[in-house]
Length: 361
Image 1: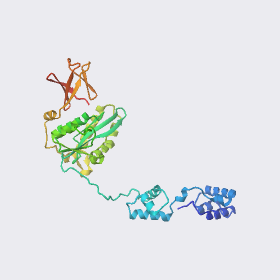
Image 2: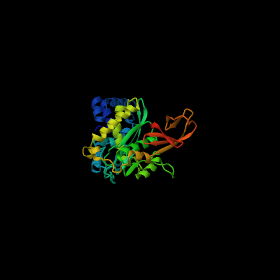
Image 3: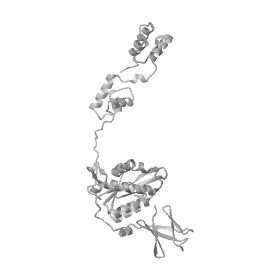
Image 4: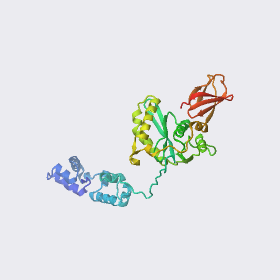
């Protein structure tokens, strides 16, 4: 390895020989381990200032590792793989930056050695399908024409089967509720649900509860709160797979309906055709079966009834979750109860219940 920092006496001898025409510039460069341009600089400085002109005031070259030190660094890393570049530098008392040691280890193919964990990772998987579901909201994805969209879904912890997931323009609690309702109506009721402490799931106040908590209690579902994203590792990995395999194909979509249509096809492929390496090359559907705790859709609509009170405007409309709905004549200025049964919307007034249409989210 070439070393620019030759002792001052060596530099003086070489430059003096060059002045006496005993050496050529290229030969002097080889002896000093530098370029011919540097030799010419040394020669010019020597002719102007004498020996003082050969003093190199640059500091970075003082910290280069010699071949002997490099061999010691590599040996230490190979014998004790757990040591980091900073740890090796401090242990050997090297006067270099830790990045210098890292570059050496990277050159030797030792920079990305797997560390032996002192404390082993405890992995968990539900023993049977429907023993626990995970639910979450994927961070917003910005589409070229649609702006920001959110993906909300549920995932079975044992099989990685996705009961239901859908794209929305907001992460409102009713969107979370709609995905939850569709999952329960089609595949039954799980024993437990794992989710984070977002305001859509858990009440922020000491007393009281969200609709999600209240209805889970009515259905006998145990709620398990994740303290970190790592607790929801399976659904977090599913989000990464969606971002890598599905999202790039729909970034140029112009309508939410287009995204939703392609999503339903992709989700069916993921559940029924995609062969997971995690489970020995079988599909998620092969490992999953509907829950034995089934509730008919009509009964589920009654149990999961959501009621909201709204005032009818002068245009005979109400606003619900950012959408307007037309109300029959005769209720302008009145406050009426709105009932949400699954994805159907009803109004209740004067002891009568009227169907308003499908809930738009």
